[in-house]
Image 1: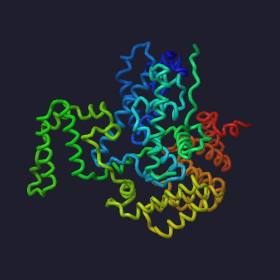
Image 2: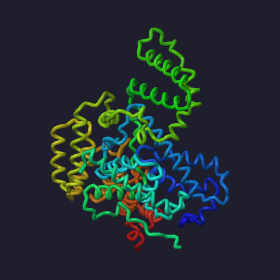
Image 3: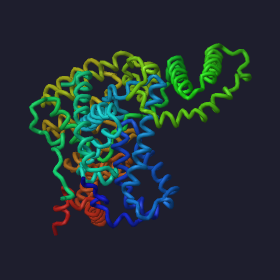
Image 4: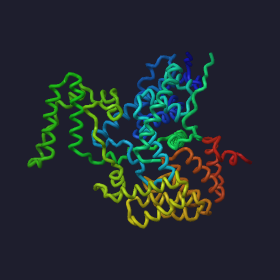
Amino acid sequence: MVRPSTVSVEAAEVEARDAGQIFRQHGARIRRWASRLGGPLVDCDDVVQEVFAVVHRRIAELPPTAALPSWLYKVTQNIATSRRRRERLRRWLGGLSGDYTDAIAATGPSALDNIERREAAVEVYAALDRLDDKYRSTIILFEIEGMSGEEIAALTDTPLATVWIRLHRGREQFRRSYRRSVQKRGAP
Amino acid sequence: MTSRQAGPPRLRDAANAEDATDLRLARQLALLAGDDRMPVLAPAAERARPTPRMLMSVRLVALLSVLLTVGGGASATVVLLVRHWQQSAAATTPDPQPAEAPPPPPHAHRVLRRGGLATKAAEAPAPAADPAPAVEPPPAPRHAPARRVAVTTDPRPAPPEIAQEAELLRDVLLAVRDGHDPHQALALLDAHAARFPLGALTAEAAALRAQVLLRLGNREAALAVLDGLPLTNAGGSPQLVVTRGELRSLAGRCAEAVSDFGWALDASRLAQTDRARALYGRASCRARAGDVAGAQQDRELYLREFPDGPAAARLTRP
């Protein structure tokens, strides 16, 4: 079983333990994770802000040997997941259970490309959000973030074989779910 | 053992898939992969939208009942139920003495903290994703038309015309993207203009028209449409402003183009690809207008932020 101990791109960055430095070095990546893991229902700026509040508060507790990117990823994933669920709960309580319906609605003048991106986010995340979290995040990291299996294994501190299994099972469910979702919307 | 292992091909690379749905999925995944920032579908206007009070009450009570019953707090549930309905009745009945409104239920706060609605909501599977049978929501109405009304000017419930407008614009989108037929899209936009001359989605239709005209190569007409849109108002699309800046630059209207690029670069919602376009466009316009220092500044900024950007080679050329 292969279990890489570090994320390939970051060996030197693991040493950084200062919150400000972490923000400079990892801010863009955390924003991307927040955006992709949170999906279109969550404002990624809110997630990023909360992540850095946690980093600022907890960084001293992180053992020096711990992999910083993995820890940052876990914090981001937990906060993004929590926000996503809270948003869905809020919508459900408010009678807005149609989370992703009619995404063509926009708040301002919409370019064709904007509408396409919006529709893509809606349809893809409607299918993703029906999956178990472990499948959902693996598919997001592999298919959207473009990470390799090894990088995902290192980032999520999971055996590589488990990553492949999650990817295999998750993609089957994802494609079925996507197909149902697209057919329901009447798209071709 | 090698530390790398070939994985399965990515779904977004399935460009040769025979199935139309797989192709659609591949295209959408590629779009999302190329976009650092996900479109957010929770606009502030929707948050402010009044929610149906009764529906919210029923769902809240149902959820609390399940949570508290599972946690052994059945008696607290009964108390909470009674208090909640008393509060609802008080709120929906005209109150002759508004100053003496009933106090908030004291137990609700304590029970919420002890039972941990927020904690359980965060820890339990999302209701819509893995609903328990007792709290399965009924099929939801489609709310987007109402959101559109809230976003524009009219806070009242959406008239049916808005749904029809949205449907028509969706057909335009499909005609361009899936049918690859911009002429059909233009015909649909003409139909939209004739049918809804004062429609709520007129600005969206105009933006779409500009995009379709660009696909047809008709830059002058596209610019004429964009010139007529209040793009730099609050809520405007930075991407469209960049496009208008490029068209103005091509038409020799450099001062207006620089203004468009500047506005877009200051906007917080500008995607990285559009930022690169705006920086390059402004550098080009400033150079032509004789603003050498400004052009040099934009050039350096572009090369620093996008060393491998599409215009980097042109900018590094002596």
